[in-house]
Length: 374
Image (cartoon, rainbow, N blue to C red):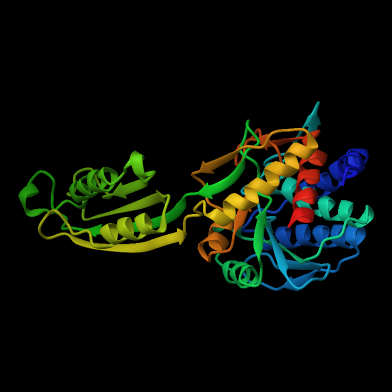
């Protein structure tokens, strides 16, 4: 166990080279051809580094998902990752500046994929026994909601004792993520009655007026003390300045910290009624990612990770965050899930997205030690 960190630090440049190859294989979620090319790079790396061939799970609209099985044992550990990114091809370039490596998806979450791959390689090469079967999922659609991968993730989670998620650590602090908010998305459509804004204003029923009332209602449901936020991020209506607006539409983002709160707020939104007579209102959507709540099982996982970090000479902290991941799905099934085990850096979904190079072997060693403790 004491040799893990020195082994990985000795291989830091190999880790960085692997990361460069994956980042340069750009993989925007909606470009199946590009995502599948990145998937081929990952398959090559798993074969060369671990001698493991991936199972390709074909998709028609998104990139194919990949499943790698490593080792044997009566129990299973699931490592769930995604290799799609939010960046169009050519939008960002890979580059190294001092201790930072930049590029599309390098922090979210290709760095975490390479770290966890090398954690397994370190255990294999150093003869560290892992008494579990490890299933490694690399999915292709997390950044667009995990619509085609959710069932696969949940099926593997139900076979597993624990789930480890090498999504990025919390920026700046490097904290692991032991709780995540649940995410809901709603579209509210409003239809009123058009009329001439000058000659027959009184004959119209303004959908834009109703939109304003609904925005005030929705935002009134925000409760910071409960960690509940609602945001009408898109609102549009009408088609002419001199016409009483006949239609309007709202797009609503909901974030909650508990399943009970998710159900409560979702019910209020679904049951909302027009505040003006004559308006026709429809509500679509619901909870897309359930909350990841900090359970006793999550606490035990974090304790093991913190113990491993102490052995490596640093203190590890934990945090609750507002963004969702595929760990939300596994946690909601009651499977202890520890998130944020990936790269240390900053800039998820930002132009300055980067990882700290010297932390790649350290966080890979943390991952390896955690695997050995499970």
